[in-house]
Length: 82
Image 1 (tube, rainbow, N blue to C red):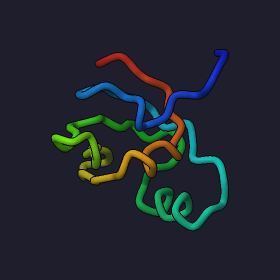
Image 2: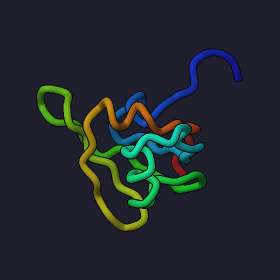
Image 3: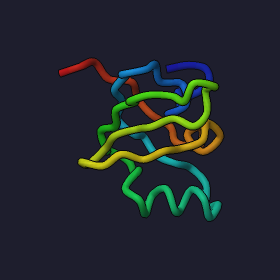
């Protein structure tokens, strides 16, 4: 794999991914991990607001609304629908 890693912000609508991690120790990144956005978690991009920000993702039976800048902190491996 070469180039810039994919992030949650890069997922297409209705796309699926597996979280690789959220590198860094910033308080926001730690909070996202506490909410369950940690390595190995399956995540589904559900929808984006009409103006493109924020976005809604679904994981572990819950929905979370994130700003694009927050989603860009979470690295993912895009996955095919199972």
